[in-house]
Length: 118
Image (tube, rainbow, N blue to C red; front, side, top):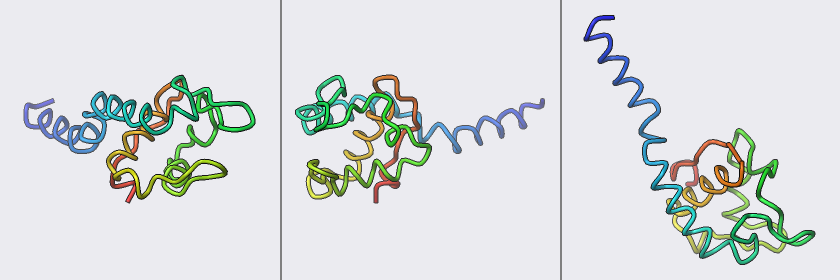
């Protein structure tokens, strides 16, 4: 492959994927902080929740969906006894905490961007 072709492939890779995932370690660290401050009181620091009251987030089917829209909506609007956080957290913070939950405790779902939250 020529140098120009290599450069074009590398540029396409950066534009298509790394911009979304390149800040993943920072986003996850920030998400952990948001989770600790806003969610861990109910879902516990390890995400295990409380049986019959607050769901275990580890391996949760909604958390692990390919489409993150349902979990984003739950965080924004609330569900059951969980309050909504649309008025409490910025789109960036919601993206961070949802990305953290979708990554942590063995969950292997894709991260969320602030644009997906808006």
